[in-house]
Image 1 (tube, rainbow, N blue to C red):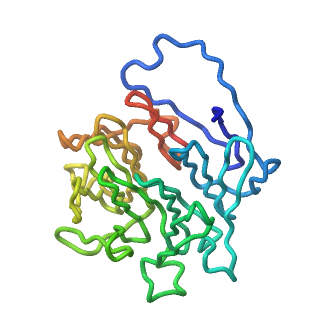
Image 2 (cartoon, one colour):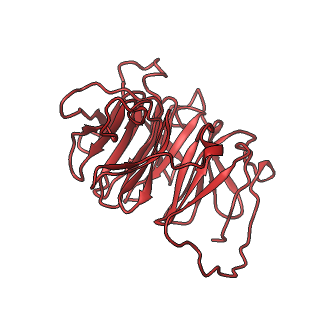
Length: 288
């Protein structure tokens, strides 16, 4: 498949490159080919929430008007149909994940969907099936597949794990307290296989193979603003974690339990961070 870069109408993005160590010290003279995928190709004129490239080379786009697959030439659409229970459960698709079996999962504002690639139909899952009319409770923000092919789903104030035996999602409990609060949704995996999720006043940690999580406040100063309003976390390489809070951006090292604060230059301290992307162990991109 051709190398593809997109210029979708999400928002104008200011990207800051945070360099740790050497990056591209010996700049390579490579000629990259760029292709613009837009409404001319059939991509809707809406926000794109997430992009995934699967093991077959297809690009998948989660948008506010459905799910789309791009094969390098054409777009295939998977749209919500209120009269078809096998269509994606909501037009607002938030996130896409592929498990180790090659199955495509999508999270929406109304539950989780498993795609049957052969038929193009979906099997729907509601974290709260008894509350079939509650879109707020069944809103799923992000998905993550770990090294053991377990599928995690991060919803409004709850974390779920897919149970293959019962073919359903079950809520994961906290080790010492069952209730948690999220401001925004963010779930990641570090190189050692540990699962981390952003919580309002800390971060949640799930060891590889475990089904319970522990609660961690990254700053030893418990009254610190870096323990409050944690809205975004992202892998930073070497098992370290970017943490964005109301006090700014910080780099957390779970091994040494240290927190490097005030990462952003002073002229960007007041900017709101939308997303953090890990490119490699020496480079992260920050969407402001």
